Length: 161
Image (tube, rainbow, N blue to C red; front, top):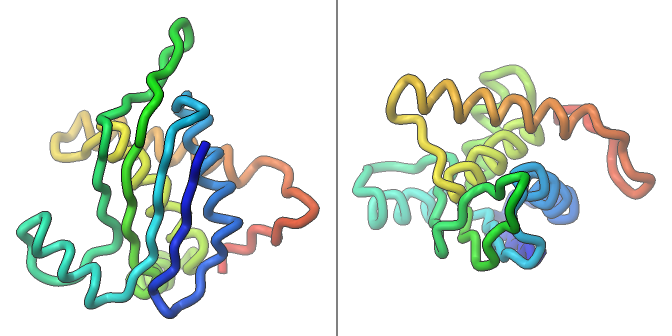
């Protein structure tokens, strides 16, 4: 998988950690091993501008997903489709505030937003109650599996900070 992590936020993100998370989520969702994903961390003003330009909403948001090749999760009995999954744009400043408010810290919130964004890139939505249940249930399941896996030697402990 080609996973590009760009930090233009000024808040410093752990690019290696986020690349491992993206790979984990994409593997769980049976995305083609040659699929491409770009995650960009930006500041509050940049995400507000993108939110207004592309979503026609005023003000900053936490994460935006821009699907490219409309890839969908792979099925157990068929080969997944190759292509470009798309771009995620997230704002660590907003993630920090949301993580503090939720009581689980910035890293846990960035992990949640990254997972949420990848699910959006794969066609999941939460506009309707059953879609919401499905997407958030899947998101919770993936994050629980991510946090339950053994940490790698070069990987920081998951302290939620």
